[in-house]
Amino acid sequence: MASNETLSDGRMSFTEHLDELRRRLIICLVAVGVGFAVCSSFAERLFAILMRPLIQVMPAGEKLVFTALPEAFFTYFKVGLIAGVVFASPVIIYQAWCFVAPGLYARERRILFPIVFFSTFFFLGGALFGYFVVFPFGFKFFISFAGKYVRVMPTLRESLGFATWILLVFGIVFETPIVILILARLGIVNAEKLRRNQKYAILIIFIVAALLTPPDVVSQLLMAVPLMLLYELGIWTAKLFGKKPAPETEETAPEGE
Image 1 (cartoon, rainbow, N blue to C red):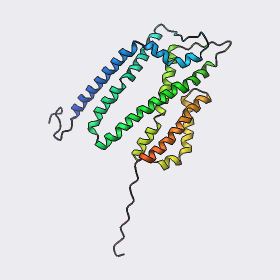
Image 2 (image 1 turned 120 degrees about the horizontal axis):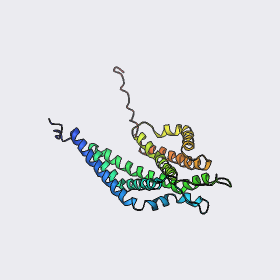
Image 3 (image 1 turned 90 degrees about the horizontal axis):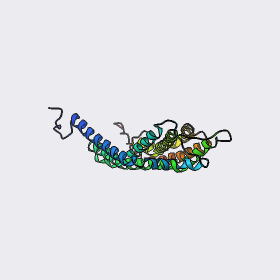
Image 4 (image 1 turned 90 degrees about the vertical axis):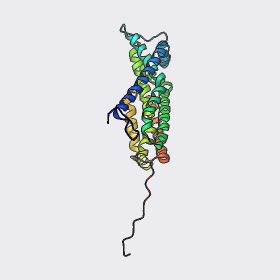
């Protein structure tokens, strides 16, 4: 049987899977390219929106600077590319779904779609929390080091790097309930185990918050407190939707009794 022919039971061959993957990737790249072309035309405005929390806490009259000739160009290029990926994300998610869905059972497809939806919801929620809540406190903390002999002059590249890092970190950590749900569905954890180890989870949460956020107590609490609430939400999610333990069967009485 040739490797590029469909298998007798209707399944796709390995070569056909590669062709399908290549086609989906090309569509995703085209979508990102279109998104980049659209977003790059107003990348400077997008950057201004992203940096608004920083600009609001800077001393009056201060502006962001760039210290290398191509720095502004590449900064706006990155902004356009990131925005283009976000713009194309519905197409990317749809193409990924179309690629994996044929290989799933109907029950698995019913589970995967809500997971993708709520993963996107929690990631965006975390990013928005980072922008509207964490940014003002974090930027204010670093700006506070300016004084009589120290002038704050944040660069475009460093400001963009810091902002995208915070948004990415908070977007990822807000996926905690989804991760717990997947582990619970696989039977790796359950609500009782999560509740029993909650004190260790809180310790880990504060360590992670100290490592990933600016070195001030307020920013660390702004990550730790939502993480503890998300962990609690994960416990209830595991309790409601986790894998149910198999019912115990009565042992057969030995013969002669």
